[in-house]
Image (cartoon, rainbow, N blue to C red):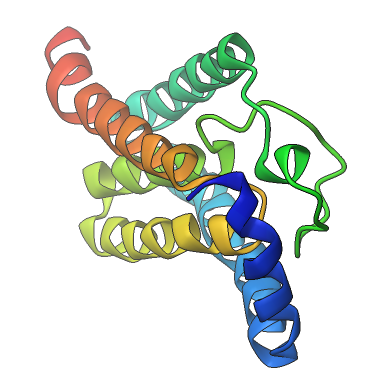
Length: 169
């Protein structure tokens, strides 16, 4: 979707206040699931003295640092910077749109949970997959930003948890 289509999208959503409220609510709740469960999962693994704790912490940490570096390198503008509209979610931030940090963080956390607790991994995968279009509908990301976030987060998380680190640690 090009930036010039976002003003019409925002206007259409604002004409449907319940839908706009649902987008705002999902924008808050979906990341919250990953951000709440992740430290709880780490504490549970610590209490259990589970050796998977190292990968559970290391992989998302490395992916977060790498993803942040990629965002700074691309320094991509957000849709509302290129078109004159107010997003549904007030970011107060410019640039660093690619890839979506919300989406890649939720995705790598989902991958880490697939490694230690597949049912929660599935739940968080669904949450990350729902978060991606919500970030676009909120007007703060382009589809390419959230797609890159999904691919990067899940891909790097899966590689780190299931391919690379199990053979190194």
